[in-house]
Image 1 (cartoon, rainbow, N blue to C red):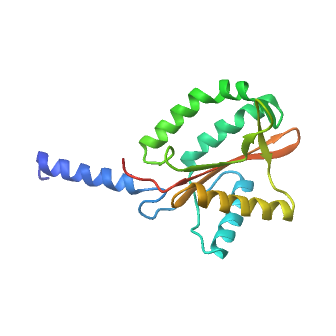
Image 2: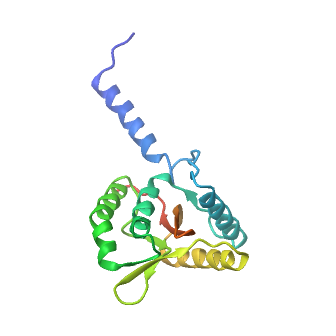
Image 3: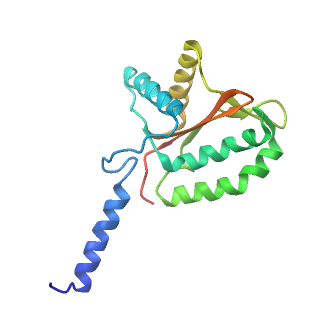
Length: 185
């Protein structure tokens, strides 16, 4: 077997790094990892059908973003209610959220530049709420319109989607995240 010189080694290593950096959302085509939760897959399928019908780009499920949606819904699950005190939410989330966002940013996600978080919002003074997962047809249509309209005004070239659905008090609630394509930094 021929021994590889330093230049050949660096060339092959560089090619491998480029190939790995292109894999996943927004890079070279690869088989996306489907969500584990059937409710999330159903929501993504409905959202992409809605987006196709409107001439909008489809979203790809991005497993790596799931850690962030899981974190964002965790205070509601810990409290066992869909509305929590903003300071409790912050104490559960803030430090870890920044760590996750930085790690995602380091992997090439434009998480700081353009992202859209659905299902998390203010509920009066000092409170945050998570929204119910849509179950009937009217709720589903409202959710699809909201997701597509909000995503397309908030995110340049929306591409990647992740969502966490959790049962709180016997009903399902969700937090979803959409970001633009992975980009090189």
